[in-house]
Image 1: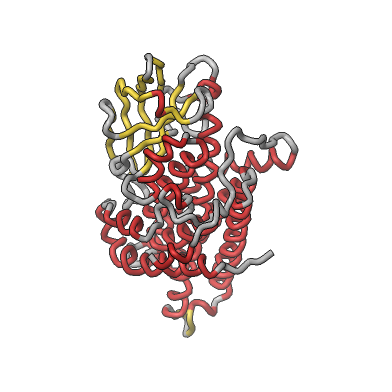
Image 2: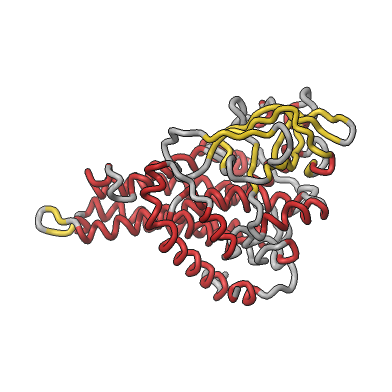
Length: 406
C-alpha cells in the first residue's frame, strides 16, 4: 500500500487550494451573509477542468482517477461547503451516473458538455414526502408514444436555479414500489419545468438549493436513463458516488476547523498562557487531528475500490457516516475553542458548524448509514453486481500531464 499522493494528485491539490484561497475564502463571509451563490465560481472551476476531473477524456473530462475527485472536494469544502456541493451534485450524482448508465448518444449529448463545464447537471430524487423512503415518491412518468409525461415535484435540489440538465426519478409503475421507478434526463428547456430557491437555511447559505416543479413535461424516450423500472438501482449507484464526494468534503471541513482552531490557540491567551496549553483544549485538537486522518483514509479506500472497478457501497457508506459525524464534531469543538468569538461570524467556525449539519442528513442520514453498517456486519445485507458498473481507472492511455499543463 502506498499512502502518498501521486505527483499529479499533489499538483491538483495545490491548484485547487490556491483557487480556494484566492477566489472563495476572501468572499465567502459576505456571500454567506447575503445567501448569494456565485455562478462565476463554476465557470472558473470549469476552466481548471475540475467539473469533469474524473470523467474520461473522450467525454470531455480530465481523465483522472476517482481519488483525485476526492482531493478536489476536500479542498473545495475547506473553502466552503456550497462549492463542494456543486461539484458533488454536478460530477458525482449526475455526470458519473450518465457515465455509468448512459447510452453513447446520451453521453455525447449530455455528458460531454457537462464534463467540460459548458452545462451544469443536477439530481432530483428527494420529494416533500420522500427522503430516506425513496419508494414513497409521488412524481410520475406516464408513457405516451415516443415520450414520457412527467408530473410532480422535487425538493432540496442543489443547483436548482443553475442547472441545465436534471436527472429526475419518477414512477413509471405506481403499484410496485421501488421496482416501478425509472430515471430520466430532463432539460431545463423542456416546457413545464420550473424551479424555485429555498431561503432561510441553517447552513450552506452560499449554495443554491430549491425545488423543481414538473407539469406535463414531455421527455423523449431516448432521455430515459437505463431500463424502465431500473431507476432505484440507478439512484442507489448514483448515491455511491455522491456519498463519496460528501465524505471527501467532510475531510476538508475537519481540516478547516483544525486550521482555524490551531491559529486561534496560538493567538488567544488565558491565565497567562496560550489556550493551546490547556489540556482540555488539547483534547479537542487531538480528536480533530485523529478524525482527519481516519476520515481521509476511509475516503481513499473507497476511491481505491472505485479505481479498481469494484462495488464500494459498504465502504462509501462507512466513509460518509464516519467523516460527516467527525466534521460536525470538529466544527462544534472549533466553536467551543473560540469561545464567545466562535458564536460570531467574525470567525469562520460558526459557518463551519452551520454547514456541517446538512451532510449528516442528506444522501443517507447517519441513522440510515448506521443501520447499513450493522446489516453488513450481521450478514443481512449483501451487494450484488449491477448491470452496468462505473468504469475502472485508468480509463485508457491518457496523459494527465497534458491536463495539468492546460
